[in-house]
Image 1: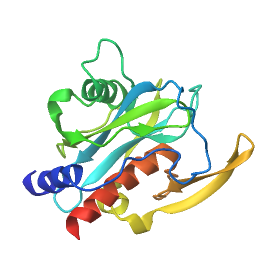
Image 2: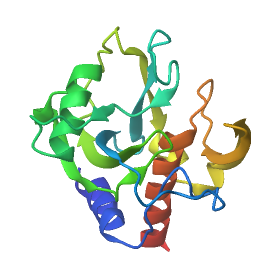
Image 3: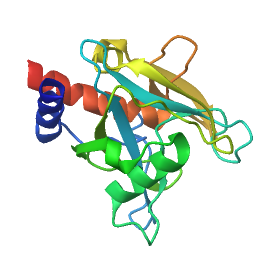
Length: 201
């Protein structure tokens, strides 16, 4: 795990600005009195030499919020959690069957503010290659891997837009095969990709 772990730890400690859902929409006026709810996601990187991957989920189409979207394992930080790291690990265990003992946490990215009112802390962890995801059917329709090299290359990211609440909203996407990775998930991956590129250049 040494080479990949060192590369990612250097990226987390290196240069990079915080991300948010508003990065590509500078005209949005945010209220200084807005209330944000704390949440956390896990970026599980499978440490497979020469073929590392990031585990993502496709949310169940039956969910009320963000049905069928591509997402990291994650959710709200509960009062019983010891913080963002505990919440991310707990959610990953619930959603894809990843035991906390099998996740080597490397650190976190700065929190990401979403348009839905969450302040999300992305927690980065290495996962052993023998791990097999077990999606929780009530929340997760599918768990899959996208190659780490794909999502760590800023050139793979596109900027797209759609109308949302009467205005045109711009956002990052990073498509992979049949999977449309966009919104906060793509923006968080882009933030990590930028840091990796800064370390390597």
